[in-house]
Image 1 (tube, rainbow, N blue to C red):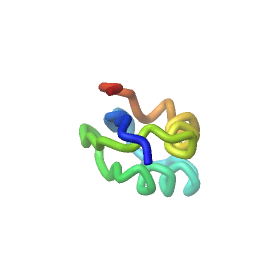
Image 2: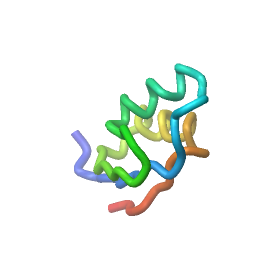
Image 3: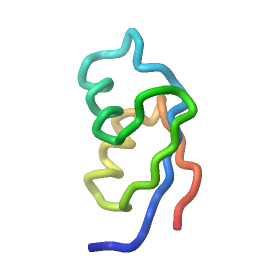
Length: 62
């Protein structure tokens, strides 16, 4: 396991977005604008962030 963490914040709404993007946000643990989650920095998480990059921002990388 990696001990590197990445904090993401939801900046856009999932309303009106394709279901796939909505499910990706749920997979990241983001349910509403302003929510932040600290996630492990893995290629899978980076890929999920890339798919919804227009709806989230990276707040902190440790």
